[in-house]
Length: 287
Picture 1 (tube, rainbow, N blue to C red):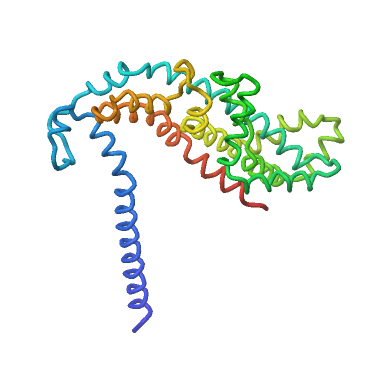
Picture 2: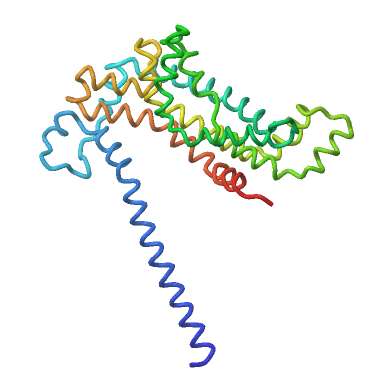
């Protein structure tokens, strides 16, 4: 076998491996996307047509938007949307302020006990969130903060993981920039906002988006700390549909509500997916 034949065989093997990889990835994509397709399909099926299907069908000949109208009239879904947007924006903004300042302090400021304190922070990541739910609930109740946006927001304004992620990213910025700025008389806050934040913007955007998604999907804590419909989030709204009996009887309308709730997160991720991947990779890589 000469060199040319060996090269052709290598190319055929490479092409075959690439083809198998694409086939497997395509099959996996179908598996992942099928629940979204089924949710969207169910939301445009009529109530009678859906209940008449003894065997579920993968298409519908008579799509309808009536379920979306029903989803907004069965419960005050628009108010739940407004509450969720307010909760997400305020919580994400406060968390971002706390995370940036804490990460900068651990990455650049020299103070006694810094490493020990950071080790203590990291140890908190080993505690499941479920273990502190009751403690937080008791605290909010004693402070008379149930059924308030303050009670919803306060337990979520910090994240040890995000502080760790941003600290690792801050430490990748050369220390020479910091020392040069101090020689020029630049304050720490000015150096943070003028140098560190612009350089580490992909990671900060990633943290912001991930926190926004986390707030939007929040269920356990809002469900626990609020029982007044004026403060319900969209996750509570879906549960309210089920508790009123509407969801058990009209699954298509419930699926329509889920589609409406899911669209903002899908659009957000599609718009910023590259920054999310870049931010996560930069936060976990030194050098």
